[in-house]
Length: 280
Image 1: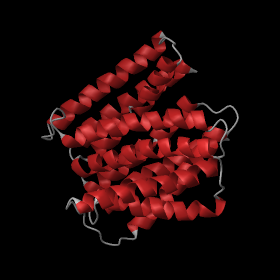
Image 2: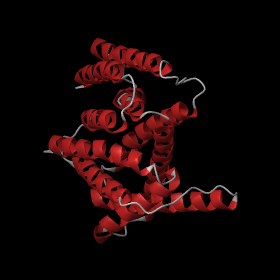
Image 3: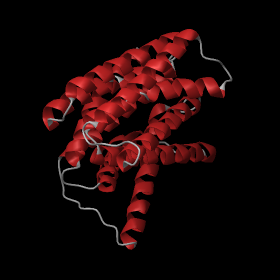
Image 4: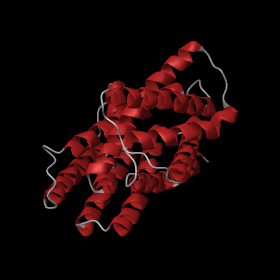
């Protein structure tokens, strides 16, 4: 059952990425995330419970990780083609597995090394393809924002597995949304006092973004909480959302070098799949 919940979460996540890209046409990064997260907090508010102080500290730490991942990810979406962003993010499960192994002092087996090599090759090919679009990863702010997004996302996924051992899914989701909303509101206030203001225009796409991330996160947390669930497998399934993002992004935004990126995406998905097979 947890596999099907993870798969449904992946579908919603794929459409969510597209909705965010569309929302960026009329609004700034921080405003989009603030409104969408605040709405998401309202959606799950009927399920909120108080909890204890140590649990809230752990959720505040999670909120910091998620906020960093979301903000940097939105900056990357703003500055890079969505097909480039979605393809690069496919590497995230590899880093989840690698850090899981490092944390427990294990070693990679030959199958895992093949998977890692395939993903690294795909990342290099992606950089080559992007350079032909006039995008240089070395000095590109969007690329480094993407790197931050991936690694903070990996840290958040590892932290999720840790805290879900003794927390309920809706408790985690409701309070995390509240803390993320507060962090974003404080950030916007500080930026505003420094004279940095983003445009804001009401767009019903913001509601769609909130609905999609609420559903995707709810299914994700319940799949993590399920007996016998595996973080590595869930991470792989969730990253399959890139197929939806890539396909819709290619059609809606008419981006360049789609065939080359599709080949890179296929190689990366194959590498991640082999890596997961070696981890089971």
